[in-house]
Image (cartoon, rainbow, N blue to C red; front, side, top):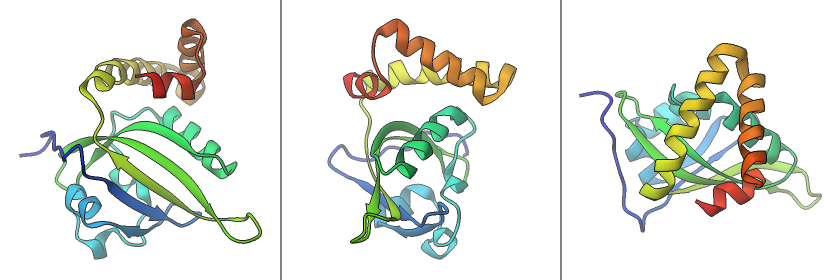
Length: 162
């Protein structure tokens, strides 16, 4: 039955790699299992094959801007499976570099998020989506920046504090 929440163990890690165009080049066994796809269905596909419609685009804009600058980012992400189920992750996404410091690919390690964090993230993402539906990514980004300003925190400080 679709739209059921899937979970994985706190001691387990979901790992994937993508090329510079976000095409999946590697997924560990848990990544493949949680996605509901077979490995051959995932490899070469854009990573957004797993994007859930409840995810505000501004989160991915921030993520991609950060990693293309050669920086790491942490983010809470709701992914959709092949069958329409979903699962939440706390992702740590990093660029990989060659010997000349050129970005060669992107690497993501995801762990199970805490309920405490999800109780904060779910309403935040809902708010950002409402802004996005009314005014696009720019409106969502403005709302996120205002929320962070009101909290007196940077994005990283906020994400790592919950």
